[in-house]
Image (cartoon, rainbow, N blue to C red; front, side, top):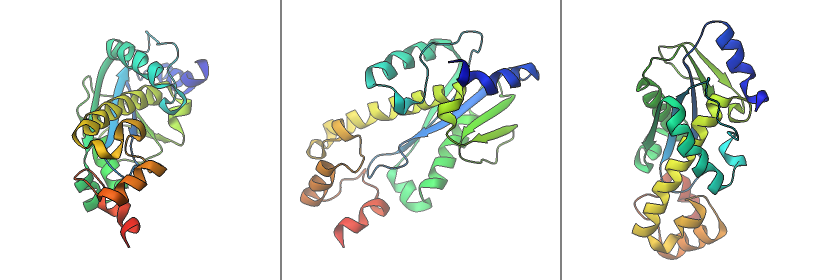
Length: 199
């Protein structure tokens, strides 16, 4: 855990108290929205076990999600759906979701730490490559984004049961691609991501 707090400790020593982490979930899937998470953790109440959401089991993510909800000064998740992704591309859709999540923060951030992406926002910010693996605030944001996107994909699994969204969450698994070719796309598929399967 101490490794994840190197950046945060430095910023705290500079008098920057409200440090917002930002990350996304769902840039790569063939279906469903991209989700951005932003949060300002209470850095006097560190939750043990917080890490890059991809390194955690689903059960562990859910547990940490609930603990973080209680230990954050502010958090927000924003979804941008497949139609917008097709319209403005996945990078711009990710930036849109991240920016909207950041701008909903209160208290206002003294510093925003962003996983990889550079954003035009009215706050001091720092983009960190693989930030979810080296920053506590970004890792916390990654858990919010991943858990809430997975929960939404479980709801879509009930609405469109033929695709198996409950198991792959929209990513391009072998089964998902087979079902996509068999049934064709549903309304949450990203047309720009699946066009090669129908050429």
